[in-house]
Amino acid sequence: MSELNLTNHFLIAMPAMTDPFFAKSLTYVCEHNEQGAMGIVVNRPISLTLSELFAQINMPLKPAELEDVLVHFGGPVQTDRGFVLHDTIGQWQSTLQVNDRIGLTTSKDILQAVGEGQGPEHMLVTLGYAGWSEGQLEQELADNAWLSVPASAHILFDLPSEERLPAAMALLGIDFASLSDEAGHA
Image (cartoon, rainbow, N blue to C red; front, top):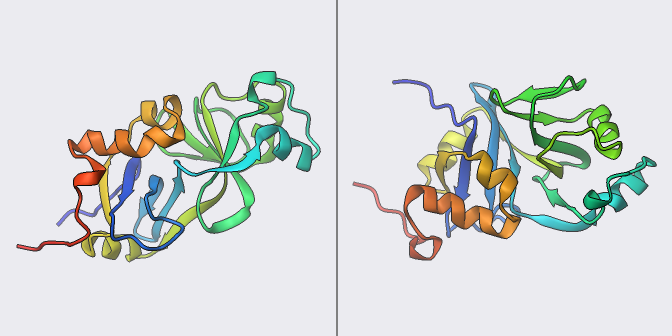
């Protein structure tokens, strides 16, 4: 049997998901291997704007069009740390390259570039990430906690956060309202 690799996939929380961190969430899987998985929740904006975040870290934010962009809750792990999910792979100090177009950067140099108007064209800034230990995500999938579907950069970067979950569901050809919280096994 081949190893399951959900890197560059969306995880759609099933209706029975009661964990408040993940209920009704859409998570983008940035890395999935034999050691576990790491992802970013992409549909949970918080009340912190980029201008407020940049003020907190004492960094200028010159592009006025970015001032009111909301930071997102990326997951319950390291919620005091920033993560930038972006297109256009750059030469940042600490980037996990998800595929040839998308990266996840945690180093401060990307924020400096964003503040100077030299950052990636499309990005999502989050606090925290979602993490799964070895075998944990596979078990949650077996327990019907998640649906998975190959990810779309259009959904990640072009749609407002409230439209991302329904758009990911549409990739599967189903409507969230039609899902039952009862799992069936043949």
